Image (tube, rainbow, N blue to C red):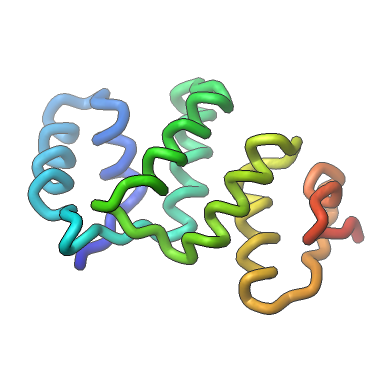
Length: 131
């Protein structure tokens, strides 16, 4: 199994740099299989959302589709998939950033009762409270 960095995923998804996109595509298509999926860390999903939204101007709905596609792919294995799916569900309907939901959902999966934050938007989630 190999891991994929955010930059590889960005090049593969956006195809914005022909040479780097070709390298990313070749790697993913050759190395990420159902039998041996490639690993994507939760932090990579957080960075991916940040880059797609900030640098590329993707709308939230399109980012949600991208995340759903990654989670549905049998060629990719997301770290702590249950927390990623819970964070995506919260992000879909909530006001906070995806990364904030990942923190709260991953903390819950690790056994935390709540996650304290100064973020009012995150504090609306049942796993979080405002400090």
